[in-house]
Image 1 (cartoon, rainbow, N blue to C red):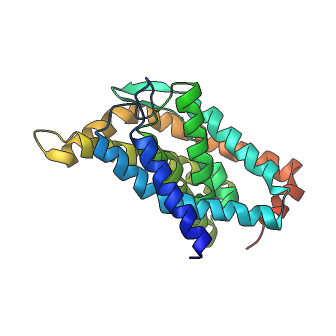
Image 2 (image 1 turned 90 degrees about the vertical axis):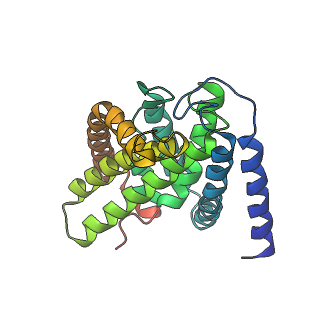
Image 3 (image 1 turned 135 degrees about the vertical axis):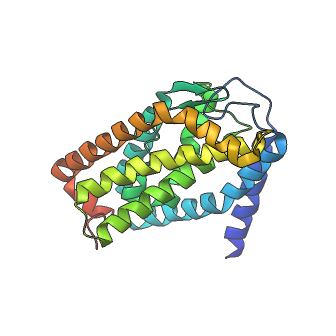
Length: 247
């Protein structure tokens, strides 16, 4: 790592810590003030390497192809709109589509971590959806864990010669569901059950999320497929410019 990159990493640590102790505001995703301070800081620090990597990925992509900003902005807008359509699910959180599968398929998961934290930050400040103290936890579940699983599933489907659109559906569908698996674990770690501990608590949270999140994940998978079909029909040059059709 260069000296410049080390400085950026140090600044990102300071950024995460400063937000982890920010005053409360009413919000959802995992809402403001719902997690203990130690968990807020820990999740923020865990996110930092992914965010730094994502920043340098975006910087490199813009240096190689400035036209990629249009597709990147589209992916960010898609994440913002879908993740803002929330359905109350359990005290302290909510169910909603994430929209991160599309960005992960187009740009890779590290890049989506930057898009995701920007979306979460705007939602927390402008829509009271999520929170500043819980920004690290929400970023890890929605902008890191979900996109990495979605991208992994997409690559696996390509390697196994699965139909492209079926692979895209599975990537978006499972990436969405995994986001809520991670959220359930995050809540369970902070609030373990008195009978059964973290594991029992995680199962309880998953059981409450499932009725709303399963159909939402299906819808997100279908939407992602439809958008990819439209892009392949009407934005093929843009897809080629970001290397989507490369083996």
